[in-house]
Length: 595
Image (cartoon, rainbow, N blue to C red; front, side, top):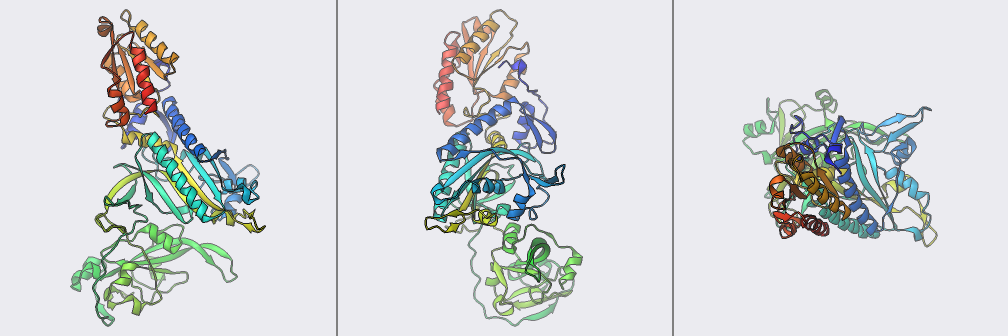
């Protein structure tokens, strides 16, 4: 490829809204073109990288028995209605009607469609286990698009789905996919850590995310440096020391005028925050049964109690309450459940469909101060086992940096990460709701258990830049570099420069190297700035000064400290003769491919 014809406009200007290095260099290097919020055209450079990532993914998915398919971007609403998700998922799922008035959706994920496809073909236990995968466009009406390709509305996903006779077989295959994911991310140059995660809207019984560590990451992770414990903050747990045993004090109402905060009530009553319980109030949609036994989705009030020195983890609360979403409760809604904002307590709350949940720390701590559900009053001496023995207790508290690891007790470290992949054990959630059955060996019908496994291709591309860049541009690992070598013709008007550059370029192309030549009549600084943004790992510089001595200059751009770079240190000299340069460059490229 000749750079003058490459469809990519490079610029020295950084977009004002681009805060992440990947976003900055993707725009500056002419990799992408934004056409709307969260909507990007991938230009040739990015398309070449994406194709290489997809090739690696396909090789690893095929290696564990995957069969590639392609499912539609659009699905009739009936499929999502059958699983129950049509009414459960919020505005991020785009719903529309075709010209006949028939309701459809833009698939943001394909569980329903794949169950329909596989269920139509699998009839016998002899056909299981089975895994199919696709690399397909998805659309999610994301309200918080940010970071270039990190969070977009239209995106490319590899999603795979497996079907099994037993949970044990699902667990076995889950580990196979886990191994394939480790290899995929290693091959593209990413150190992605796997962490326990929330199943979220996907549902199911277990999930792990693969996270690329980055200070710009949206997810908060809790990591233990003393053992292998790693978890998303949404599901992280900790080991808390048990309070000292005390004799139960009598429950007494005390006047606490104007004390609507834990700090204020602790000061007034001369106690500490960890000897109080605070209420956090939400509204959340969830299923309820009407008098006729029919299920419907309604918005329900949810009150969570946690020890006063801790915070409620909304993901844990959402799961414990079986809520589809959460929003803060308004003052007037607080009054409707028979309490007063700032003085909410667990005794005496009553309202239709009200959900009251109590964190484990409240259950374990004796003689707490709690709200009295009336203005300017609290209760002292609250003990859950005596005063609310039927309360639902769950792990609701957020884990903080420095809390004890639940596995070994060492302090947990907090980090930020970008999710690039996920794996779920879905169980029977979709196969049962959608009526997918097969005949077992004994002739009985059974629902297969199911797993699903996703990788964000665009996110992976962006995260490679996040992990590997300098102040000039990306540092692409050879496996995904848009071009393997670039020939830079400095002062191309001078005699011999173009002929020498063309000769090297032709030999590289003939040898199977993905080569780029820059023979434009531009200054050296401009040419090198563009070369840094494109970042071919091997660079051959042809200039009048070196040609006088029969030599060319050779450089490389690779991630610091990688095995690739160490390998190349002994293969690519700073200078080479004009005759030797193509062969040296080709040997270097081949070595990097193997690396």
